[in-house]
Image (cartoon, rainbow, N blue to C red; front, top):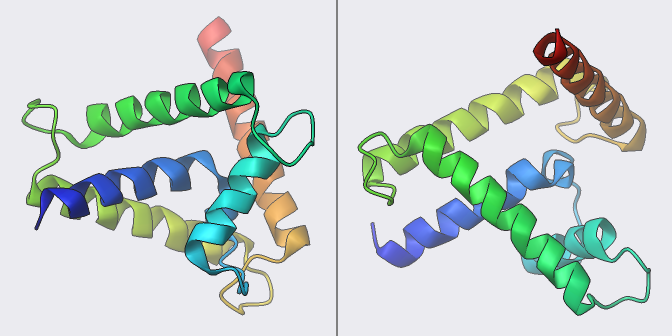
Amino acid sequence: MSSTYGIRLVRLLALSALLVGTLQAENTNQGPKGDRKARMMKRFDIDGDGQLSEAEKKEAKAAHKKNKSRIMKRFDADGNGKLSDAEKAVAKAKHQERRNKVMKKFDADGNGKLDPSEREAHKKARAERRERKRNLEDS
C-alpha cells in the first residue's frame, strides 16, 4: 500500500470517528467529499455563515488532531508513529466491526441506513454511555 493510501485511511478513520454522520450511510448527490464537507460544516460552522472562520478552522483541526492521536495510540502497535499495512487492516476491520454493531442495533427497518430517528437513538445511546463512563471516572 502506498503512503498516500495510508494517510487517506487515517483521515477516513479520524473523520468517521469524529462524525456520527458516517454511520448514516445516506445516499447523496454530492459524493463522499461533498457529504463530508457538509458534515464538517454542520459540526464546526458555529456561527452558521456557511464558511469556517479562523477560530472554527482551529477547532476543526484540533478535533482532527485529537482523533488522529487517539487512532494512532490505539492502532500503532509498533509505536513508530505510522500505521503499517497490517495496522491499517486492523484499524479498518475494527471500524467495520463497530459500524456493523451500530447498524445491527439501531437500523430498526433493516435497510442498511440510519434514518434520522435511528441516528437520534444512536446519538442518545452514545451520550448516555459517555455520561456513565464520566460518572465512573468521577467516583
